[in-house]
Length: 178
Image (cartoon, rainbow, N blue to C red; front, side, top):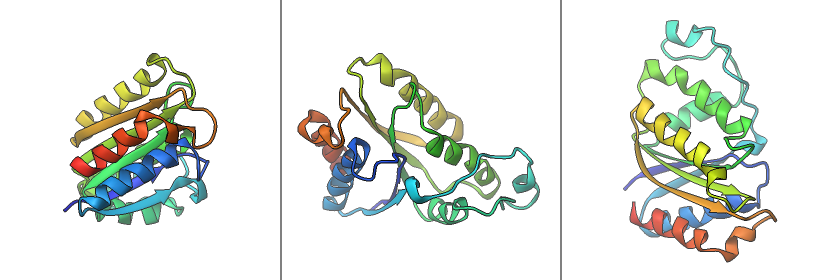
């Protein structure tokens, strides 16, 4: 059984990214995995200050914001799902701030060993998601986590429009098979 943390990076609690995350979660739960979803829309996670306080203080960050709670979750899960809309060919700031702030975990040791990416983009062209997915693949190699899969929903702009596409089933099946 995996302990899965879904980082929901969309400001829309009921949008396309959330629908993909929910489908994945349902598949994972059906297979007996424990799933926790953390919605970044209510969180306050500041950018990394590059002060290296964490490197001198056993991974403790000098900033006191929602990342404090997220560090605990990251230390108690083995799999992370980054559920993100595509903003200007990349991650929105909410996700990017989390990625940058996990620098503190390089001292403590990462407990996350596996990762999955779920994305939603309003444009249908694959190149719209390619930059984000390529970055994600390189990031997983760099930090030493195994990529278990990617679902990139495209051509979905209206809230929850992705529910009528093949990507919902792909997200569900990915959750079920990990």
